[in-house]
Image (cartoon, rainbow, N blue to C red; front, side, top):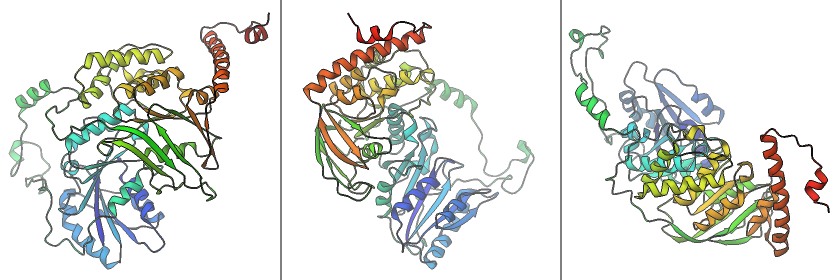
Length: 508
C-alpha cells in the first residue's frame, strides 16, 4: 500500500486538494483511504464518505496532536493494508505549526493558503520546511505579483521542495500532484522508521492536570520569554522580510521562442485537427460563445497540458531554462490584493523577490505605465487594497510586463478592466511576452495577430487578422472613442441630449 502524509494550517484547503487528487487517480477497481487527524471534532469525514473514500478519524482531545499522531499512525497503516487499500493518505492540521510529523522516505505534502499572509511560510515551521511537495492553494484570487512573492517566500523556507499550484474547487493542478503521488513508496508498516524531525517537548505540571497560574505551580520542562530580546528583534524586523543571503533560489530567467498547441478532441469526442505554433511577440485572441471552451484552452496552456486534461490537448514550449521558473502568468477577472501595503511597497517587494537592484527606477517605471493604462491615476502611496478594479488590473499589467518571470501571459476578458486595451497589449508584447486573450470584444479581437475560434470545446479555426480588418479596426476605434466620450459625460454628470445621428455619422 502506498502512503502519503498531508499537513498544513487549518482551512488551507487540504481536504479539497486530497479529494481532487483522488478523483484524478480513481478508477472502478481502485480503493483509497484517508485517515483524518484532528483535535476536537471534524466533519471532513462526511465529504470523504460522500466521495466513496474509506475514511478513519482520530481525535487527540487534550493530548498533543503530534504525539497522538505518531503513536497511532503505524496502526493506521496496518489497518489500511488489512482493508486492501491501494493508497492511504493521512491528513492533519498544523494547530501548533508542526502537526503531522513527516517520516523519512515517506512522501510528505504540505498545503498552504496564498491568502494566509506573505510571511506565513516562514512561520509554519517543520511541516513546511521538511516537506517534499508544497501545494499552494487559492492562487487564482490573488494578484500575479503576490503569487510570485508568496512563492518566493515558500522557496526561502524550503529550497528543495517541489511547488505545485492546486485549485481545490476546479481541480486545476490536481493532476500534476497525482502524478507525484503515484511515485509514493509502498509499505506494509512503519515499524523502525524514523521521523524527519523531533517532536515538541514539554513535561510540566500543566501536562499533568494543573490549572492554577503562577510560578509556584509551574514545575518541570518550562520556557520563559526574554522580553528584552523580543523588543530588540521587533525593532530590527521589517514588516515583510526577505532573506537576501539565500543562494539556492537564484535561477536564470526563462526564455521562450515559441509555444505549440496540438489538438485533442471536442466535447463530443471528435478529433481537434489543429497544430498551431505561436512565436514570441504575438498576441492571440480567443473568441467563441459563452461556454464554448475558451477558459478550458487557457487552462490547458496554464498547466502545459500533455494529453492529460479533458480536451486531450498537448502544449509544448520551445526555449531555455523552462523548468526552473513558472512559465505562465494569469491576469484573471477575480484578481484581488490582500496585502496591507502601499503601491510602492508592493512593487518593491516583488522586485526584491526577483533580485532587482534598481528599485526606485523599476517602481517609477511600473507606476508610470500603470497610470497610462488606467482611467483614474493613483500615486505610489495609495494602499493597493483601495485601488479600483481598473487601477488594479492596470498595475498588474505593468508589473507583469516589467517584473514577472513568466514569458507567457493569459488574460481573461481585459475589456472589463477599464484600461487602455491596445496600450496594454503593446506593452506586454514589447517586453517579449506571448499573450493569449480571451475576449468578446471585437476591437480587442482584431488587435491580435491571430484569433482562435472555439466551438463545442475545440479549436474550430485560426484566423489571421487581415489588412481589411485592420482598416475596419480604425473605424471601430473611432466609434469606441465616441462611446468613451459618452461614458465620461455620464460620469461627469452631463445630459446626453444631443443629436446622436449627427454625433455618430457626422453628416455634412
